[in-house]
Length: 172
Image (cartoon, rainbow, N blue to C red; front, side, top):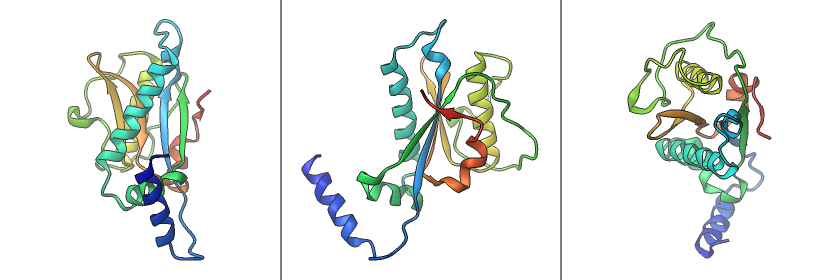
């Protein structure tokens, strides 16, 4: 471990109140599994890079949120869960509220319906649901193709976001 990070980690641990119950924060990522299969056949490293880009962007965009600050204070206790989009999972649109959230970047909701692979459509539908439910996230778009590859949420207590992610399985 880098010497400066180790010292910062120890300092943060000492600052926590003894016996205080810490809230467990998790950063969820939803990655397109179909990109590893034909016709795309991306190598594992390319998929990992997409998840890293999305996670880093979500942390950066939401760096001032108290959950993100707390998540980054204890580097040795970061928790990430990577889920996969294999095919259309039926992410629902019923009962959505209006609201804003990070998700489609500066492009905003574009005319993506009916285009792209089923995995991309599912990912974009999830991004729309998260945006309408005010769940902070980042939809990573691979350039120059402008292809949705991964969604990363900012760190959340899992109870706050489970309902939106329970249809997805752990990435294998």
